[in-house]
Length: 396
Image (cartoon, rainbow, N blue to C red; front, top):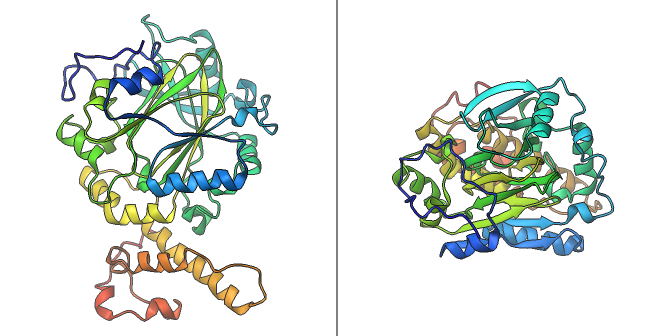
């Protein structure tokens, strides 16, 4: 049976936010039955034909619904030796960011020391002492090589479906990272940066290690229900990433919550602007995580997320306006190259026109003055649209 804290109301402020819920006896079926707006996360097999799999992924992205692609570890290309503790700790001296979930204090320690800590404390208990969660760990190069060699190109960081790839490398924010934890460690409720598409693959698990996910779907652009709920009812800012919501608080939320248990080989796809929280269960788990900035991400950022970041004083990290500008330049170049080579087999860049529309948004163009070096279709805009000069791009 699932442990449900019936005494914790949605607005309870008596419990410290750094006390994690006990996941030892959680199961998805019981959790889903415990809340009228709880739903299981849809799942599809990694063994589906690629065109069928991509169709399911695009459907998920269009509806803003979470999706899990399961069974990657059962495919012949999965490398169990590579995705082992030894394959992960290739540089034991690497200093990694670590959070003690009992004290909510952050520190740094060598990766080899963190691995030893887990090996001697596989199960979260009530005993004294720190329980560390390894966050934002540099992804091993061979793990990244496997990702790019065997996962569909649609998911690749800095790939054709990631607008960040249009930026020069020196301006790109690194999104590919690893997370290492054991039972009781968790990632507080949050949204991925700037409306990006999130990806999380569990690469290693020992002693029944898994992770429970609580996720919302993408909501209307001007109605961020999760952020409003956390602000108005729970008294915290979702974008500060400081609150670990209880099951009772998720159950009382005025929006649908999708629940899943991620196990070895599960790739979790997190939709843009999804409020999600992850709680680890059982033994050691290592996940490879990254984000992509799609066209929708740019729109969400310009029309909603950046204004919210200004209000709550959160850093943008991803250079959204610069990314839009660089993407328009890149797709314009591709369009011109295609027009000059009629015999080319390349198809018309499908994002070219939508990108132009995003670029023409006052939230971008009012910060720029047209230049004679720009393509003609970007220069021929009424002068009133461009607005006064701005120093928004001066730091780039």
